[in-house]
Amino acid sequence: MNNQEERNNVFGTVLTDALPASNYRGDTEDNRSVLQTLKYADGEHTVFSAESIRNRLREMLREDGLKSNRSRLKSQRELTVHYDEFPNAREFADDKLFGFLALSNKEGKEFQGESALRVNYAVSIEPFSQRSTMHQSPVIKDSPFKNAGSSGIIYREVHVTAYQYPFGLNLNDFRDDKPEQEKKWKKWAAHLLRAIGELNGVAGNHARTMFPFGPVSIILRLTARRTPDFDLYGFKLKPEDSQRELLDSLRNGELKGEDFYIGGRIVKDNEELKALAHQQEEARKNTDKRAGLEEGTGLSKANLFNSATDAINALIKGAGLETEA
Image 1 (cartoon, rainbow, N blue to C red):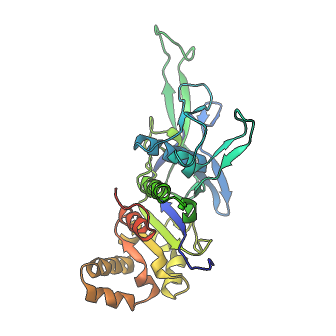
Image 2: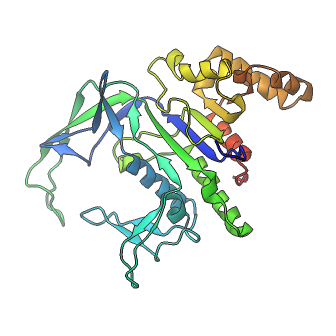
Image 3: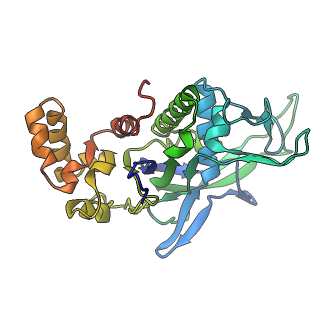
């Protein structure tokens, strides 16, 4: 535990909506477009890499106008990126939030910047049943270019599922002796959290199939602890089983309710959480009702919202980050 009991660590886990997920232009086996999987006790679960999540967040921040250094050169035959300048975490949002590694430069010195964002695999909440669909690619004729001599049949693996993925931030990474620099870093951190709230385009597959990675449910913890102390992959196929251990720990006081910001479908689908969220909304308008909640259980002290966006914005405010959209 930090000596000053400052809540410097943010831990979060996101649950997406359930949609058909596929991989059109990535890994292939002969004429089959395959999904990547990891083996769990109950079978193989499909996954999206942390790198694909980070890459899309980087692109979103650039699209939103944050000063960014690295860009993807999509016209190249292999994975290629371009840096406008030598990496500088004080000037470029992406260098600060996602880190960099520059093994050689004009001075011949090694230099690297640690990533402020920690993120892990997005994992399906249920095992993959090895389903696929069949598609036909056309032959290109009488055109300025030609990709193949004939039309081809493509089998695409498809998994109808929701995904969950965790992330973390250490707010100490956004502190600086110069107030203006610290203000800029905190604004970047707030912008990043809001981007997670509307994440899309992960793995670059949206030219063919759209799979939003924005949260339908989100669990956030702002804490002095250096570990999340709850299951970062705790969402389950049955809503009543999702994050059960966490909710029990909040009810019996094992975890501090005020550390948590919970929003979205997990609140709306749980009658107890839904009722508490309504009480909290009323309490924000009425001081007397707020006092009653403060005397309640650990679960009633958790910050509960009907939308993931409201939970994210409340955490941004609670963490002392930039509060303007």
